[in-house]
Length: 416
Image 1: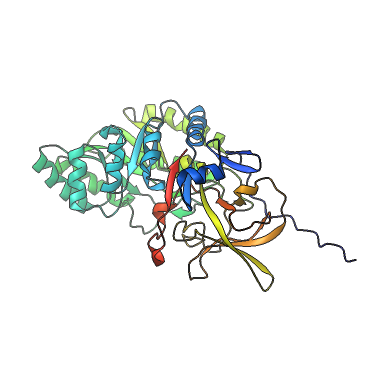
Image 2: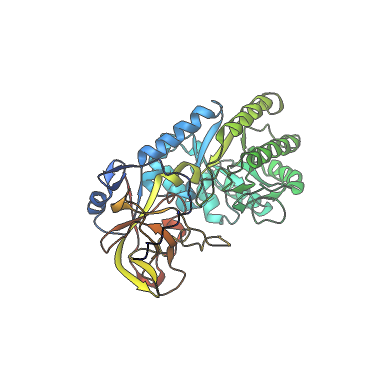
């Protein structure tokens, strides 16, 4: 009798510790997955764990300087219930559209603690923002002229900070948002002239915003970007029309998505931020420093859940066909910036803890070979009716996906 072929060890993702399990089922917010699916009423859906978000913010607060402001970038997950929950945990919200601004204000955040960034703000959006009294991150000379007009019409000087495109990049970042030619912000060398225009226009200058990049797991790279951002802001402050009140050092804190990645080491970043806060007392005495985080606050607190509707074997390869896919979770499919596709952590949530039994690909119902949620994943043997879970799905999920593609139903979202 031939011996069974041993199963290879699966690729190792960073441990998933933010959720519990009960009787072989993953639990979100303490609720077993099959019960949660019944509560939601249909699959697929995203589920976000309130307690996991609260713990993440508490961990940050314990490490970061007490005077450092923590802002949430709504673009990561603008679900109103998520934003409202974070309103009670963070010091401010950053928005990138009038729609996100409405979510922020409806959630109860004070307008003075809301900021608006983005390279293509319309005249209507700028007028709305000035009327609301939020802080606008100016990204071009065009915006200065429009804000001057809005200020005159409303009899209210626009509150502005300059978003600076620095002359350096955040090394090892998933997306580089600064350095070199970029549509974001004002090139550092052009900022002095813009500051003069802001003063001449009578706008209420309050500070600077520097965001060099996102999704970084290298503490040394984050520290270097923060130090360079601070030094650049100090140099530019000498030519500002008013003292700097706010200095947004951006974010860039990443979470581990793929095999081999390790969580970001927060302690060295914390030490650096303590040093910068101390330096600011001398170099920018009226300024409050802040960091702006999105996925780091919510990414690991969310899961995407879909149901196996068919199990197929094609020329020896197992396919678990689900009712979810790239139309709901574009980033997990590998089509949201990945150069070489890698798997997010995937599990069979209704067989949680069972031993690995096979290599299977988790695919969606769309008529495209791009509709892959997990390619050749090592999983327990799943059957139709089982629930598939994609971890690390709390950020850039539903609203970053083409939900109308091929006319399938839109995804549901729930906070537990």
